Each structure stands twice: as structure tokens, then as C-alpha cells.
Length: 409
Image (cartoon, rainbow, N blue to C red; front, side):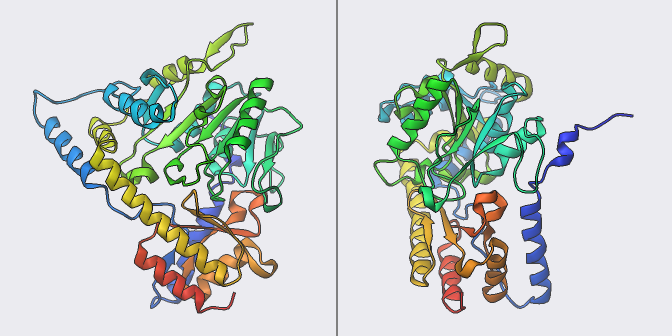
């Protein structure tokens, strides 16, 4: 009889969101007259920018004409988009990234989950805690995680990010092979300064580690001391892979487009006494397992870099920033301790009176028909916090804050 990959059977990650859905469904059934507002939503609510829509329509028309029809595209992405990314996301920051080091995909989560395939099964993986679940779950699937003790996996190296250390992970005593870093961070909404990130780059160079740098929220950065790309730092091209997305930057959550940068200078041991470029291995992996992001979507992404597109996209970012600012200010006025929301669309809220994450979740749901995301679902260090997001509409955000002010926390 055929056997399954047993590591899939040990996955814990689905529990958080299935439990949220269960509790919300139960509340809705008991109180059908109440309109539930989610401040836990990780999806955007503003529509695609007009420049993006115009590019989509034009590309669709091209697909209906034999003279301009596009079939299979390059697995790495069309050159026009890779060149636009290099020219607009990197060159203005003094970063020399070649288009052939850029790989277009359908999402940063997909790439973050798939990139671990390039590393040996015995590789030691380090993640910040709290952590975006795909970092851990994809390594569980690959058999790298070890045993689960109810809170953590035995072979995963956890780097706690707490208010005590300013949400800056400390350099570990034990050397990892692969280090996942997300900045601006999901879920805490905090971000690493240039100095803090340089320490990680220097450590990776000295120890021969690879940093997988999730930069999906870089468009929300407002502080000048927060780098938009890890490649702004000296030596990062030798040790870091960067993952970016159009999902939150340009509202592509339903359209799907992202990209990963793998510099040619980044090499790892080949197990035979030599070295191999990760860029070439990722290229081989994508050519084998991926058929490429659709032509019409890549044309839409290209439009994000037009003057009109950039202006329209930044208007959306400012709207989400305004939501984050209103949420943070309102919660602070109620006496809650709040982090994030400045360089990211996420607000990390410490639960009051020693409540657990789930207890506070239930308090908001039952008392105000509001949904948040319990921090404990992101890891052991997330207990005692909840995550709120700024991706709701302004109207829903204002209504949510009105309800919050009317209940006793």
C-alpha cells in the first residue's frame, strides 16, 4: 500500500485559522442580528489602481489577437517586468540587481514555502518567534522540524522577539544554516533598523548562513533608518535571498504576482567539496515545477511602476497607513500597549489584565462583534498578544473603533 509523507500528518498550522472560523461561526449563529467586523483580515479591501486596470484590459485584448497572443511565457518572468523591477525597486536605492537575478512568481508565500527545497534535509533552520507559519510548516513538510512538544519543534531554532528585546531577534548561540527574517514583520508590525539588520548580514557572512528575507511589506516603511531592501547593506548579496510581493503593495491578493531575488554571488556547498550558485538551482527548480505568472498579470504589475501607477498605489498605502494610525491611537487611549502600525500594516496589541490571546479574542468577539488574530497562533512568544490589521475599509475601521470604545477591556 502506498504511504503518505508522514511529516504532513504532524502539521499543526491549520489550527489557528480553523479555530477562529469555528468561534466566529458559532457567534454568528447565536447572534445573526450582529454584523461582524474583522480587524484580523490579512487581505486588502481597496480595488486595483486605474493604471493597473488599464494595463490588464490592454493585455487581455492582446491575448484575443493572433498577432499579439502570448502562450507559454518564460518561467523566470517576462523581461519587461524584471527590468522594471530592477530599475525602480533597486537602482534608485543604489542597489545593483540584474534582471536575470529576479524571478517572477504568483506569490511570496509560494516562493518562501518552496525555496527550502534547495537545502539539505539536515539543514538547521532558524525562525523568529512569533513567526509567519509558512516558514515553519514548509520545513515540517520537508522533514527538518523534528518532534513537536506542544509549543515548538525540536530541530527548529527559535529566535524570540518580545517587548523585552524590542522585537529584535538576538544572534543565536547555536549556528543555523538558514535564517528566516521578515521585516517589516508579520505579525508584530515592527521593523529592523539598518544597524540591526547589518548585524545579521555580518553574522551570516561569518558563519556561512543563508538569510531568507521576507520583504513583502517594504512599501509601508516610513522611517529613514529602516532599509527597504536587505541589499542596501554591505555584503548582503553574498548571503541573502529577498522575497517581495505586489499583494499588499498594489492590492494584487486576488491577481497574484510577486518576485524573488537570488544574487549570483550567493553560493552554498554542493556536498562534493565545491560550491554552487543558489540562483542557478532556483532557476532549475522553477523551470521544472513552475509554468510562470500569466502574461496579463505581469503587464498589470509593470503598470505599478508607471508614474500614474506609482501615484495611485501610494494613495492606497496612505489610506491603510491612516487606518493603522487610527487603530493604534484609539487603543492607546483605552490604556492598551501597542506596537507596530508605523512601518507596517499590522498592529501588535498586548492583552490586558493577564488575559491569554484567546481570552482577549473572545472578549472582542462577544463584546463588540470584532475579530482579531490571537498572537499565540504565531508561536510561543506570541502568547499575550493579538494582531490587528489596517486593511479594512475606513468605514469599518471607524465602526470597529467605536465599538471598542464602548466595551470594558
